Image (cartoon, rainbow, N blue to C red):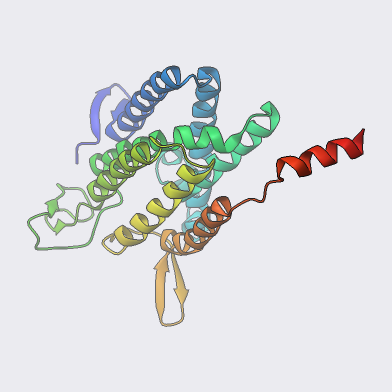
Length: 270
């Protein structure tokens, strides 16, 4: 709604950028404080945070380019020109690229990726919440028309100016902050490695699938027979059963050798 916060010459400070930066700083500070309390390596936390931001930005932009391929071919400047390159993102792209980048980093550093992901994932949800507030300020990711008291009206020159619409950005922000709280509560008890991250994927997929029904901005759609789903809904339907399956596998009872069997094996080796 108020994206242009400050303009000096040709430079304009946008609310979206400020909220992303603020979210990252707040999340990193809280995460590092928690790391100190839990005796977790703060340097690794910082590395993963920076890698996640860069990979997330690239992934979100790349998926947006894929979704907007028609507009890209028609007028490339509208998608990858300046300053358009800093606008237009698909959150799922950032999540997917971020996950893979962290896995690669963990492989190189020979650390347990699941352990650090579980520790940081609540704060990733927090950053997303700040980002959605930024979306509200920018007027993107808006909802469809409504007569509900929850509706908001964007000023001109917004595409939906004068029409009361669902504040889907704020719905998403509330959901992301709720996910952050749920994950922190869930992680208070000792869980099997990977379970906090699995719960994040499940909660985010369900929440994103629902919110997409209320959105009315231009975004990619995938036809499924007589119906259609947004790109994010389609991805949600893909990742949700995968996440549930991974969670089941993580919690499967593992057979352990009895002490006498272990002793017998050691004697054989001698």
